[in-house]
Image 1 (spheres, one colour):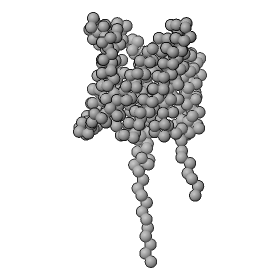
Image 2 (cartoon, helix red, strand yellow):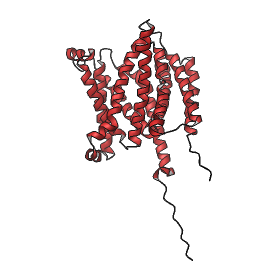
Image 3 (cartoon, rainbow, N blue to C red):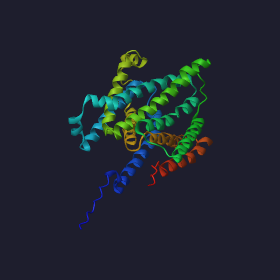
Image 4 (cartoon, rainbow, N blue to C red):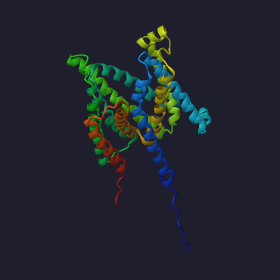
Length: 334
């Protein structure tokens, strides 16, 4: 009697150890670059951007540089022609339109909040976006966290709070009215944190589920964000300043350095979100605060605060635990 041997179904490409190692290497590489960029950006901007420079001009220039860099990278990897043939307006708005609009609203809320809260309170409340990122990632992508990873997130929040305390200034609230502090300070920053988590999860959904290229999302979100910013300049102080002094008022050749660095950071954010998710980006941002403190010590002679020294091992432990103990689906016993 003939015996039929059933062939095993081939494993999906994602289970290939070589592919997994390569992806893991990319995640660490992009995360490291983004950490360095975030950490160095404040010091470089402080040195190379004069006070006279109009904020809107630097932001718009950064978005233009970001689009150019993304297009060059797409042309280099050979995806530009394919994307050009398959691109649709509906698909673009679905993947990038909503996150871009959310980020624009979030930035406006942060500006309102920062003017009505002291720096320390603002920084601490702003760290809640890590929780909302994890929450929306679960709601939209069903990406669960293990008990250890939840604990690692709490450690990261503790480190972020300590760093905020260490870097907090003596700036007092601009209003002594408790109602104004609540409604124009605390509420806006908390809503902005919710929006940040939602936008980050939507970007991750577009890149991982819809397979929307991170470079393409960078181009689309930069264009949409720039259009929103341009439309708002007509009635803003920056718009009046540009009309009066010109777009590049206060610029020098060195002003391009932080602008280009910031544009590269925007591309790296898309890559980290695409490969590793929005929660990992939160780890990168907090780690970058430590890099900033180190660079300030190296170049300005400002020693790290005791809070920074306590936060350093917390960040290291949280990253290690989060990476080592991912969520695993329990196999049902037959």
